[in-house]
Length: 144
Image (cartoon, rainbow, N blue to C red):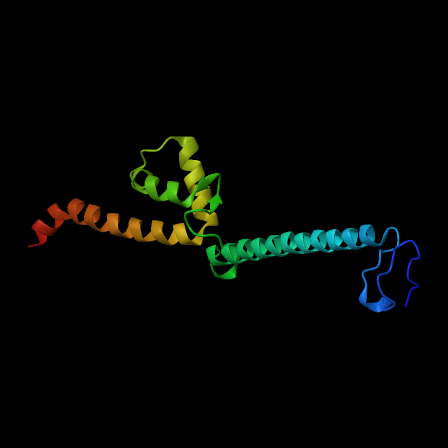
């Protein structure tokens, strides 16, 4: 235990029961230590929040991705044209009413995108059947 400071007047001989002045710099060191702990806690909170935000971003990205790492069909961009755009242009493409540049983009996309290729094949089959029956109608009438 430290010696009592002789500059402080004592009212009794029981030195352990009296308040004694702190040595110079003790309070300053204590305050700095408290401030450092508070800064470290704030840093830990910020790092924790940033880590939590990163987890949210990773989970959201994983939820948006389709199996085998494919992006959703509306987002895929192959042949400089998106799946959504190909879907909207498909009737015009089947009818042959698109310009050469757009026709090339759609063809390139259909070569690279199995999802759109499947939609194209189905639409082609669906449109071929009515056209075929209409063009064959006179021949069918002759057979009957």
